[in-house]
Image (cartoon, rainbow, N blue to C red; front, side, top):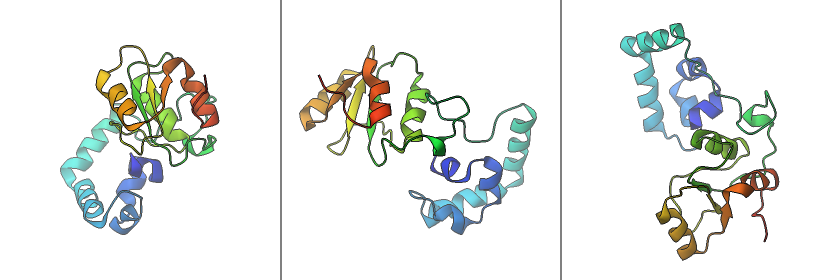
Length: 159
């Protein structure tokens, strides 16, 4: 995901030298060299060609939840540097779309709650563990119905 966000397409990642990959936040030199080597293998190039031929989009998708055609970099960065965990189903979003909406606004969407989590969004049929952990470590819980408000403002909706 970090590479996709930084480079925008699989072709750009394939063309990038390992040093450029390593410059992306969260990607170290060892991982960058491994990715670069993996992507230059003939067998993996064949797989990428087959994916392209099958119509698989090998570019970073547009931001979910934003204006039509809005790219991730064009969204207001209301959640810059903030980690937001989503549990359960948030109306109007698939899990992937909710995560993409957070990322598009500069946030992070980790799979688990920690003391550094900014907020936990609780949709329908949530996992009990994430809500319980949020309460234990004092992380604000946002009802799924107020997710858009969180995205728009970057603040935990009050009352």
